[in-house]
Figure (cartoon, rainbow, N blue to C red):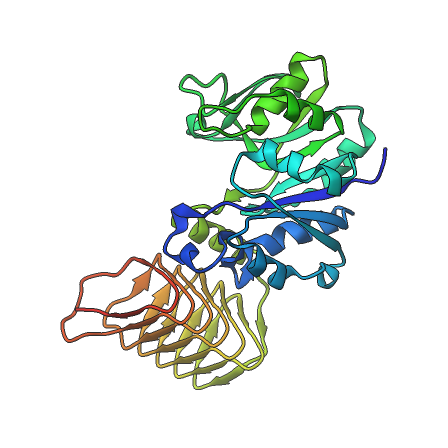
Length: 357
């Protein structure tokens, strides 16, 4: 088999994460202070896939190019292909066909996270004789996903968002394909969403006698398309955090698995892990609770924050109630007003300033 290439899909408007995605690509929103997209690139490189094509949208492509560059910092060689409109995953495959060189490849959705990576999946595909290998996971609400009907590990039918699901095994955002997928993607018609569905392309392979196999995901998998998913992904990644104190600690208590980056400063505060504090962040007279990611140059003063994500440059000042289950965008200022609110839970876009009543 030819060497596997990588295809990362990094288009999409990110409507479910607005207003954050009004000013930033959803794949660059950080989990544990690292953009979601970077986890996918690292997973491919760890699986020995270093020639990677990233499909980008016209609206967010420049931002992704700037963040990823030529891929050298990941040990990869990255090229970019622009998908002019979100016309479906199979359309994205056809858009990238020339860049992929018509050979086998692994496709990874850029807003997905897999705890155990894709090395085992890539190795199985390299060793086997299948035309496609898909990753599945058991879900409680299969009608929200593409769902597989199985005969052992062999896939016999796929249905996109079925009203009457044939199983509870949903497709995870990782697929391995041989070159037959290109012809299959050309053969299908747009769905009711006016998109070329990857499930239809895989079903076309099955209907024409191709061998499509499946593997069940090990560890956890998260699609980070919504606030609750982002926070849960942040929690899951922080579960594996190792304690590392490199910043400046003054009259402060650090409990558990906390990573404090060089240049960060924590004064007269309690930080209870797992939590990560980015470079240049300043935490003063505050409580930072578990499952919190504080990015670079964030300021937290006289406040309590837990189970939240604070993006670069955000400020949380003198809150009289604990903030939790929140995602603050870049350079947001959140501060106390004259009256005390009962609770706070919010998603706030970049460059905002909020004064609480």
